[in-house]
Length: 262
View 1: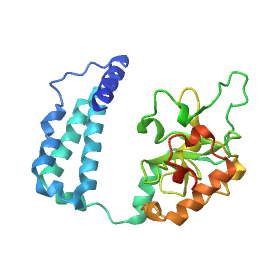
View 2: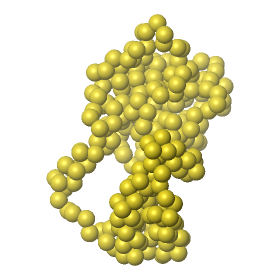
View 3: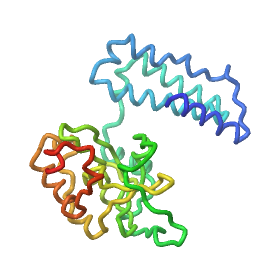
View 4: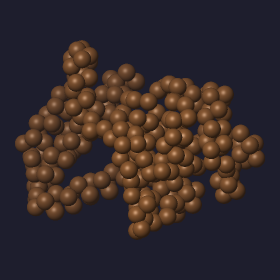
């Protein structure tokens, strides 16, 4: 997957007429992964977020390099090297919560509120939707997370924030932001994957319930996914979808008898 991402970025740079010199801003010189492997401090569970942030910075450096912004790329690499040398610096950020909220808000795309934007499913050229269970080839997680989700009446419900795979009773879930598109950290609903459909281009996912019925689905009760162990809550949530969209034989074909009866 990493090679595909790099290849795509290089291709983008070529299309833009950028011909970066590989000797300039050598990202491998930062030796981030080597540092993570060898540094007990970076491997400390308390520094997991720092490691994720360092990798994000490395990706940003590569993007700058691909656009030919080599000086800016090198400055980002210098920041990476500095944080690698002193991981404790990662704890020195500002403590002003209002300012932090303001900075985060600036990074979020403008929100499409649920039901505000009508789609084009009624257009004469619209192709039939595909049930998730009937897809071939299957979906990658990166094709699902971040994608828009619409109701059966083609209103925006939200975006897929996360995917939960392989519960012991074989229910898989999409975590869908319930207030609109691109609003991380807000309320979510837990949608069994089997009840999703996708358009032919795999760019939009659809619930098989209307925007009015979406309002009857309870919100995800906690952001720490403790609800996964709450069988009563999950059973109630799953039953709502089962009552709105009874399972077909195809939907249950991969489930054990006790799971399909839940």
